[in-house]
Length: 189
Image 1: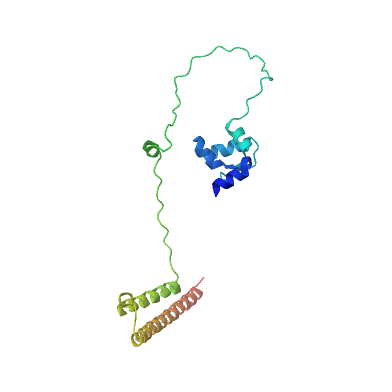
Image 2 (image 1 turned 135 degrees about the vertical axis):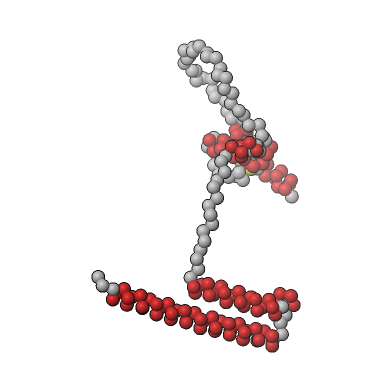
């Protein structure tokens, strides 16, 4: 079908930049930049080029010979410097490139503190998971209704006990705060 479509359409068939890059043997980005410099309306490597645009891209027009350059004054050639630029022949980075970079210092992980209420919720969740694992929910997959009700009652009792402890601790804290505020107000100034 594609063969027929290509022949019906004829010269209007567009070629994608990535296909052209694969044929030529260069990167998509290079061809894309070159096409944009020539003024073609392309934005990505999947943009299409007409046959004329493809020819212009692959064989850019040579500069006309009508423009003559003014003869530049001859400058005596100096000896070439002994520094030779190192040209990378491989696309893949070498191991030595990674060895030159200093290692980054690892930051210690931030320790987050939980509010007492949030910690309580996590604790209740863990207790519930513990009860469910004892019941064999993970191993068997199905619990009897009686066993499930028993687990719910036990979990509710644990939650009730934890809430009572939490209330008692809150009362104790508020009493301590009241004592501290009264002692600080009674202190002579």
